[in-house]
Length: 296
Image (tube, rainbow, N blue to C red):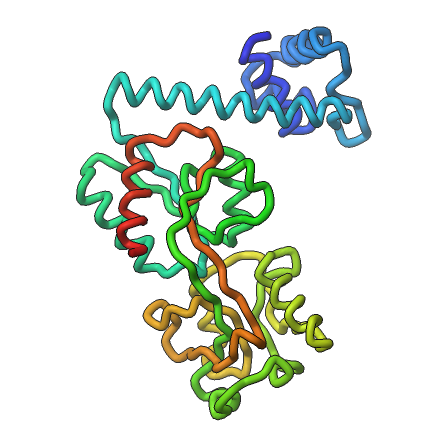
């Protein structure tokens, strides 16, 4: 089986049909059909079934495509490693980080890296941790700075950096700031700005409320992306949200409510995460070392 045939199968899966995939690849439809048939003949099972909307992977096809993606990533890693050995080029570092990670930690490390390596280039993505993990597994990121994932641990290589804590924040004029100690029951019925229900942080928050027999927060604003600028929506309002406990990284005009860990424990461990077994360029290795120094 040729690696080219694997690429053809992945293209059909991505585009959902022979026609669209052939056009993208720049080959004829008969040639692409024959390539898929060659792979099916070798494995002895059909990879796709035709539907009204195009071609859908069979059960065997789904498993095969998942492995084919891994093979492609390993092959691309091998090429990158050989190219680095041959040319010594610094290349491009694709770095993702979670919005709740303190900006100075990441940006100071980036500043040091580009000063040390004048020809290096950086591509930064700031996304919610779950999306970052998906991008990492898809080979679209080299490194991620985020809370250490509890699931799919075998698919990631993690270098733990520091322990962190998230806190509930509100505009500095919010009445709850006048309370010496805020209990979780005081937060019921409040307006919130929160990530979607599929995000781990939201699930942890909801679970803490349910554990005390309280109704989980009903967000007034719910978002499926993470951005520091979202906190500007809270300025001058009564909304609550979640932020890192680092006061230097907290948005201006917002302060953390005084909630004890016995009421809401959002401690976590932050690390530099890569795909297990992936090739890490010298640039990625140096960034990891700089982040380690910054976190100290």
